[in-house]
Length: 299
Image 1: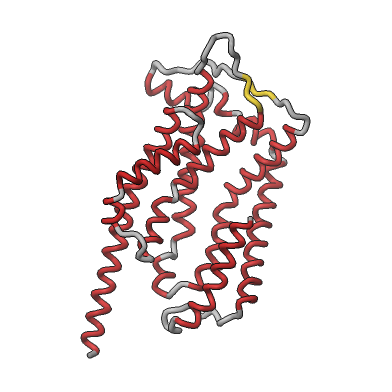
Image 2: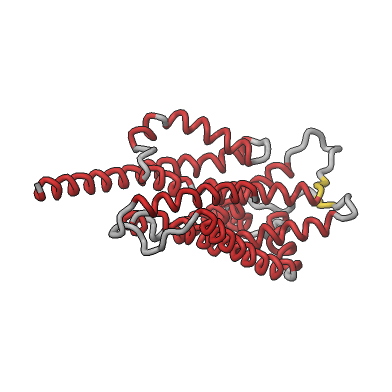
């Protein structure tokens, strides 16, 4: 929360400056406001986002049977849809049992996990609205042509986030659980996972994939700001591969399979990001040439 407030305060400090330096033809019709008024505006955007998160969280909290029985514990059962797909496609890799049990060893463990899972589910479901509220605050600080370019930001950010969440839940989580539960140093060692550890593993994998899938949007905005160019991204491709493998190792359990499962789509997303940056760079070049041509004609 402190990070979000700090970011919001920085944007609030930036908005009056942009609104006073940009022309009225290229900026939005928002009136100039003092810095404290921008902070007040930021506060209401945050309040509305938190209210939306709270409402969805409460609804999720009331659906404990579905939330835990279907969503959380789904990948721990052999009838999970991913295992069925693998069995149908391979006709060999059919999973009959996942050799582990889930236990709670803390008196308040189940209640705490119920709240935690409800908040995470609420954030995932309410993410489009939360991002929309944040984006509504940032948008007036952009120039007119920048607002047009970023008009679909909420849609594409949400789309990539949901694709990452889906990939993490339906691909990374079940394959990771299957690998780790079948890995044994000795037959006498029984896998009995703590509820908190199990939920944390799933949450980390799913949310990590959701955030990592934002790479093309990050490349888009950095390219618009002129910070990143396609040639730069190509020259640093080998460095990016190392960073991606390190990130994949951090957000996944300590096994090679999970790291490859997360790292492979991230590498593909990096290549897509290079393409996105190239498109943005080419468009900026055309805009600059057109602007220079108009200035020449006016002279």
